[in-house]
Image (cartoon, rainbow over all chains, first blue to last red; front, side):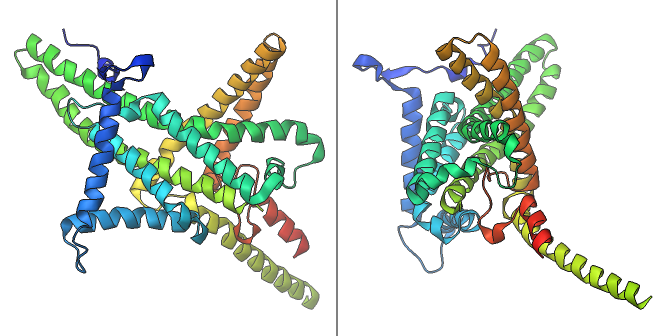
Length: 243
Length: 125
């Protein structure tokens, strides 16, 4: 029988270090993601042609994609946060996309990775708001125009709503990656199981489904990176523009 | 008759102005981040709703559980915060669908928009 569909998510140390700071397969794929993303951008922009070739125009279109996202959602004030937003997008996108290589490891399928990124975004955005607006920041947990006697109910709800941001940000990415990759593995298991039982005929259906699912997974890989990034932009916009 | 029609015209004019103002603020918000423009954004938008709902509930229960453990108040704060979290989740989804999802507790920068502000503008205008 095939291995468990969840086995692909196990963390295996590659280089063992004292005090549990192992260099794992997760770290390896993060390193690969950073190297490939850097190579993609630096290599693409190496020639700096006036009329970009295919590689350069890919690098430029990613840049413009994030640039437009920041301009539309944060405004010109968000320009100085471009490096942060762009880095988050590339790291999540390459994590998701590299995870589609058979036999690779998807580091975005671990809640601790996505939560670390989400809590960083959350704390960063909160600090930006605090530095920009001081204690005035907290006045915005009090909703505009609500009757006073509802404050004891509404203010806790607003605070919970605010605290739910890093949770929803991290759980969404993690859950989508785990669910998609598990499903692929389950259907791949069916290919062998049904194929062996029916002399290969039964393998066609799960195989066809898996072809569809792989396409779907590529779409999810992009969309989840997009969602993570656009929410970073929206949160940044709130922190900068509350008044 | 004259009075009536004059009043109607005035009303029509003010209604039109108010609608235009509402559209300007409300739809500006929507086009900004709410309603999807491309299929990609549509899918992204749909995938967000469920997690917004569940995350607030998780935070509510988590906060209640921690407070209970800290204060030793049995299950009661967890029960209370379960409902507050549920309320926050519904509010998250409502804001998302209204196109001002990120505006937790505060208003959009542009034109002081928002449903409540529109009501205020109607009063003053």
